[in-house]
Image (cartoon, rainbow, N blue to C red):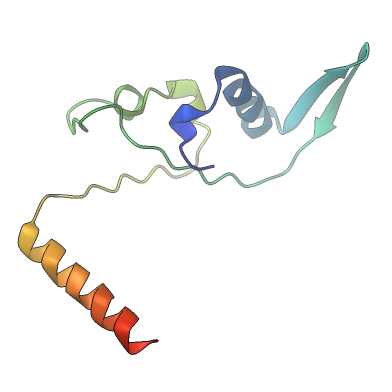
Length: 101
């Protein structure tokens, strides 16, 4: 799920249920049923504003702690500003792309 922070709250609630109880509740045309779910969820989100390493992940991402706790692994990738490194990476990508065409 890309841009997980932009997912509607009702959808987050459904995803939380699937992760926590391994079921999804569906109500249509007066019928209510629970379906069994077994799935892997990989989600990515950006911080709200500038990332604060001293603040909890739930504050940086605006995702509730109960939902975050359902993920087995939470990995934070930071892009530290380093113009020299950025130029090296960009040069490598351009040289690699030019060599593969």
